[in-house]
Amino acid sequence: MIIAGFEKNSLLDYPGKISSIIFTYGCNLRCRYCHNPELVIKPCKKKMIISEDTVINYLKKRKGLIDALVITGGEPTIQPDLIPFIKKIKELDILIKLDTNGVLDKKVEEIIRLDIVDYWAMDIKFPSEYGIDTQSIKRSVKMIMNSGKEYEFRTTYVKGLHAIEDARNVGKMIKGSKNYYIQNFRKGKTIDPTLNSSNSFTEKELEEIKEIITPYVKHVVIR
Ligand code: SF4
Image 1 (spheres, rainbow, N blue to C red):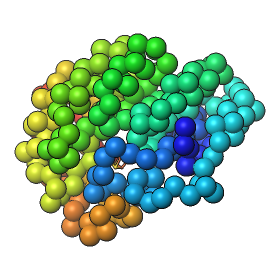
Image 2 (cartoon, rainbow, N blue to C red):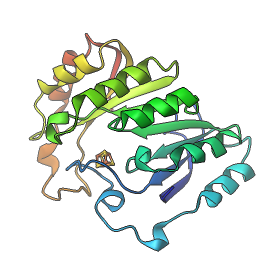
Image 3 (cartoon, protein in one colour):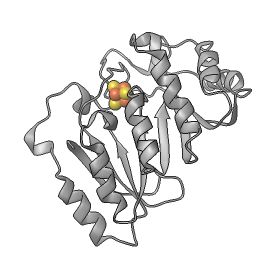
Image 4 (cartoon, rainbow, N blue to C red):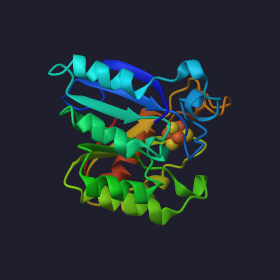
């Protein structure tokens, strides 16, 4: 595992739990609005890397105080040794939340079969932006919905890249799901430095997106 970031304590990233967060290096997509360019397009410097043992030892020391480990990135599923790493964490009796873009559906399938993730958070992208296979994304969505685990889907909406009506395709893709979060683009450090505050939707536009998605999903939140 190439771990390039470690946040020791968070009350926000695993609903209702105290978690630690690791950020894996590298991604199989290049979202223009990605807020983690240092994990995606910048070279991975040796000094950024945190060993698996550092994370495991911290969790051991904080046993009973940290409930969960959130694995985010980058895209964690591209890490060849993700599964053995998760297994090591599960031995500590720690919950796992895994963030993914769902492109590597075979990896998602294997993890679900092994029953080692407790909470899935999948970003729903617009496949047309990347020329990626819609089928793999749809498969990941269905498998996560049927996994019996907690899950959420979410999309970052970027004005100028996404149209409000695009939300209907997202709704169809995740039809029947429990939780969906609409995330507005926020200006800041991004892969595409030309994106700025004009790429954020207004409150009213976000409500329109919510209205489009609501018939497909039980619980839709703008965050
Ligand atoms: S937003 Fe996520 S999927 Fe997109 S490039 Fe960044 S880490 Fe990869």
